Image (cartoon, rainbow, N blue to C red; front, side):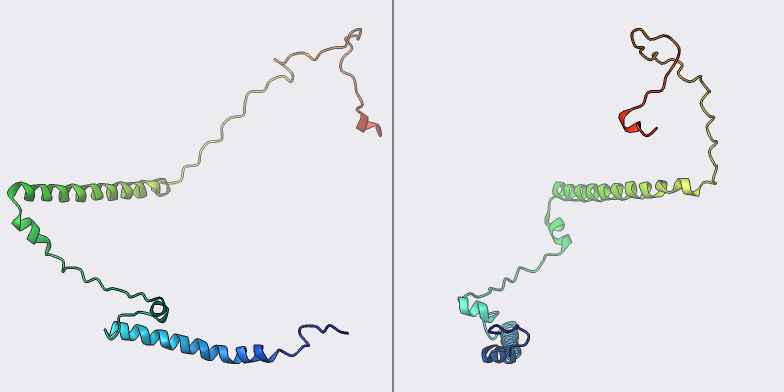
Length: 161
């Protein structure tokens, strides 16, 4: 009677307080994180999250150079460089085209037999009959036994016969 089951015992005051305070603490942590991220995206702070702020880390933005137009490089190149660029581009396109054509051909011919009219195969004829025990080695005989033919032998598990 000294020990009570866990279900019948009332929860301790500390666990009741934690159960009541957890949703509010969770909401507060997410609200602070949202505020940090919104201020970072608006350019008001250099810190992305509260955890990075506690660690003293900052995210740095990297703005790459704007991409150049595809024709600008070819226009400034010499004749040989321009021909080389065109040849490699054409070779790459031809390679991918050949791979696609090969896959398409495999797909096309994979189901070709289903499009043909059904022709059932003929049943093969049965093998020719042969005499039993022909072409096999004869059974060994015991010494002193007469050639009277096969005899019945009872094995130990066959004693009930």
